[in-house]
Each structure stands twice: as C-alpha cells, then as structure tokens.
Length: 360
Image 1 (spheres, helix red, strand yellow):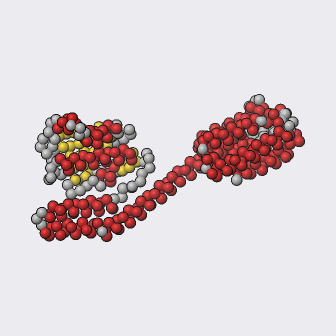
Image 2 (cartoon, one colour):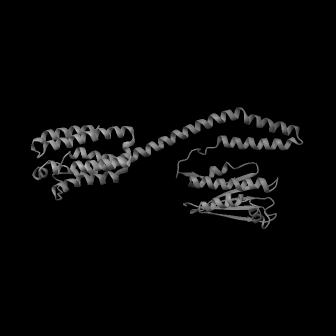
Image 3 (cartoon, helix red, strand yellow):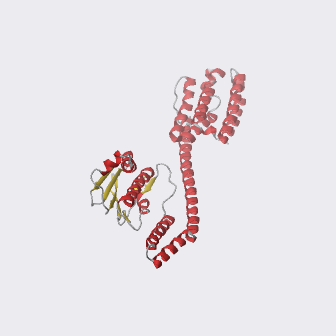
C-alpha cells in the first residue's frame, strides 16, 4: 500500500514539475521506469522472492540510479530548489524493504544512502534540520520498521514452535491412551500371572514389570520431543528417563541447561555406558547416574557395582576391531570438547566421568 501511494505521489509530482524540466520526456521516462519497477516489486514481494537479499539490493541500486538521473533531466538551479526525482517518498520504499529484511541497522543505513544522493546531486552537504528533517524521518522509518520486522519474526517463530509442541503433546496423549488400553495392561497381566505361577516364569514377570514401568515413564515424560537448533535443553529430565529397576538417577533440583545438541549427545553417551552395564557388568549389577552442575562444566557420572574391566581389556577389544567404547563414549565427548574418564578394575565395577563445557 505504501508503494502504491508513493507511486501516486510521484505521478502528481511529475505532472506538476514537468514543464520546468530541461528534458520533460526524460522525466516521464523516469516515471515509467519507476512504475514498471514498482509493479515488479509488488509481484515479487507477494510471491516471496522479493524478500531475498539480492532483490532488495537491486531495489536499492534502482533507487540510486533513478535519483541520480535527475542530473540529466533537470538543471542545477531546479535541483537546488526542489527534491530530486523520483521523489524522496518513493525512494523510502528501499529503506522500508531493507529494514524488513536486514533489521534496524540495515534500514537506517539505507536511509542514509538515500538522503546522501541529494548531496551528490547538489555538490555540497546541507544539514538544516529546522527546515528539512527528511533525514530524521528516513532514519526513524528504518529503525521503526526494522524493529517491527524483528519482533514479528520472533513472534512467528514462537508461534510455529508452540504449534509444533501442541501437536506433539496431542500425539503423546493419543499414544498414551492407546498404550494404556493395550500394551501396559498386557505387560501388567504378564507380570502378575508370572509371579503367581512362579518358577522359571518369575524372570519373565520381572522383565515385564520393568518394561511396564519404563513405558509408563516414557509416556508421561514431559521432555519436549522437538527442539530448535541452538535452543537450551534441561539435562535433568532427559537423564531421569534412563531410570529403571536397576538404574538409579540423581539430578539437581534446579534445571541444568545445555545446548540441545550437546545434551542429546551427552545422553547418548550415558545410554551407551548403561548398555555396557547390561551387557558386561553381570546379571545382578546395578547402575548409578549422577548429574553435577559445576558452573563452567557439567559432569555426568555413570557407575556400576559389577565385575569391572580387567587391565588391558579395552586395548585388546580395540585391537580386535571392537571400538564401541572409543567411538560411542570417548569419541562423542571429544567431539563435544569434553572428556571421558574411566575408573575401573577387576571386581571394582566401572565408573565413567563424562564432562562437557557449557560452551563448545
């Protein structure tokens, strides 16, 4: 709408001053270029591709070219007494476009460029804010529109995130209803009947009961399923999901925030350490996970009371091509800029200390 109104104003201006121009036909040619470019910008902006940097920079170049063409169309005396073609109001479209795309600084810088063209045409710089405050208006437009555009982008991003999270919550609730009506009831029945029968089925009953509790924790977990890049994530709830009958998890009462990507990788390393407990620590081994917030660093300790690792066992496994520990735990922590420290010995259990910095 502003572009349309500025075109109508430019038309009225050309009609008014056409008789005073040295080359009135050239003046109308400038207005024809103005009209064609304005129509192209309107289509491009509505279609979306007009909001790209290359298009906005081209618009600024077109404005500069049309304003400087005033020197060919009119005399020096006319330029000194009038505003340049194709009017300052129409040239402000470039300021608005730059502010929308590049923010307040980009809008204000474009406003300065637009206003400096008048000094180029006149051959001298005149600053008289009492008589002409156009430069102030250009800067104000660039600042206001730029800030409004940034605010609108943030609001739009938050709205999209809220919509995604609402969809996730709705799907989780639907899933929990189906799981509760089916899988959880079957697991509870298997666990109860297995304990009643006893004997060899006792182990199956214990496994069914453990899986039932783990599934209930997963269904009711409040951990967001969708996180945007660079968003902080609370590590505590993510680790609490690892709790099970033989896995105890201790986390601070306050949130322990890390970059979401770092938190995901750290949890994956903890999961690999717990998988090793299940596979190698022994059938009755228990695991203990402790989260410590140390300010500049965050440490997760994973300890078990199993059989431990004999000296040289990891080197022997690596020599045989089994590099799960090196890749899944040590490699992950190295990639995060942290460190993974192993404490173990035969009959002493295994303890991993996984430490990552607050910022990579």
